[in-house]
Figure (cartoon, rainbow, N blue to C red):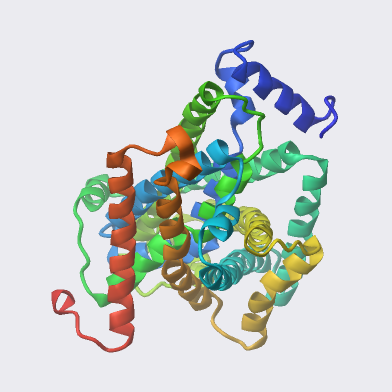
Length: 431
C-alpha cells in the first residue's frame, strides 16, 4: 500500500472519496485518469508513423477512413477490457488462463509473446531512429540511449502508478502538440481529407497491405491485455453501485484518450498526404520523410516530426514492456526481473539493425504481425465478457456484444485477405 503522502497514495484517497460520494466534480474525476492514457500510447507508436507515412504518401487522403474505423474498434475493445478489469478485479490473461483449456492457454501465450516482441521492435526502433536523426549518431547508439531512458522510466513504477502515468501522459501531450504544429504548417486539402474519412476505398492490393498495417498499428493486442491489468484493483470497490460509477468514468476516459490518439493518427496521414503525395508518393521511410520535410515544409515541421517520434518511441516502449510482463505473469504465473523483460523484448530490434535490414520496412511488417496476432485477445475478451459467471450483472448489452463481434470479424476478414494475397491467391475485387 502506498504511503498516503505519496502521489499514488493521495490519488487513491481521492478515488475513494469520489467513489463514496464525498467528492464530486471534474477535478476530482482526474484521479481516475491514467489507464486509458497509458493504453492510448499503443495507438500512436512508431509503427503508426511508418504505416501512416506510407498511407498518406502513396494514397493521399484515401485511407483516412481506415484510421477512423480502426480507432472506433479500438475504443470499443479498450472500454471492454477496462470493464473486465474493473468488474472482476483480474486481467484478461489471468481470466483466460483460468477459463480456457490449458493447451489453448499456452498457444495464446506464445502468440502474445511474439506480438509483444513485434510491438517492441516497432517502438524501440522508432525511438532509436528519431534520436539517430536528431543527434546525428549511428542507429545502434540511438537504440542504446532509448534502452537507458525507457528503463529509467520503468523504474518509476516502484514509486507507485501515478508518477509513471504522469510521465507517459506528458509524452503523449508532447506528441499531440507536435502534430498540431504539423497540421498548422502543412498545406492541407481539407475537402479531400473530409472525403477520405467518409469514403471507404481500397485502390489496390498495396492499399490493402497498408490498411491491415494501420489496423495492426492502431488496434494493438498488448494494449487490450494491458488495459484490464491497469484497471484491476486500482480502486477498492465494495458493491455494484461503486463499480457502475467507476465504469462510467472509465468509459469517458477511454473515449477522450482514444479520440486524441485517433486525431494524432489522422494528422500523421494528413501531413504525409499534403507533403508527399503530389510529386513524392514514393516516400515510404521515416528517415526519407524527415529529410524531405525540411525543403518541403521547413525546419520547424521536420523538428516537430522528430521530437514526436522520439516521444512516441520512448513512451510506447515503456508501455510495451509493462504489457509483456503482465502477459507472462497472467498466462504462466511467472514474473521475471524487469531488466530481463526489457532485454528479451528489445533483442529483435538489435537483430534487425545488426543484419542491416531496412528499419522502416521492419516497422511496417511488425504491424502486420500484430494485426495477425490481434484475434487472440479480441476473441478471448469477447468470450469472457458474455459469461455471467465472470461478469455477473455487468455482462454488456447484446448490441454492444454484436458491435464488438462485427469489429472482430472485420479484422479477421482483413487478415484472411492479407494472408491469401501473401500465398498468391487472387483477390478479384482488388484487380
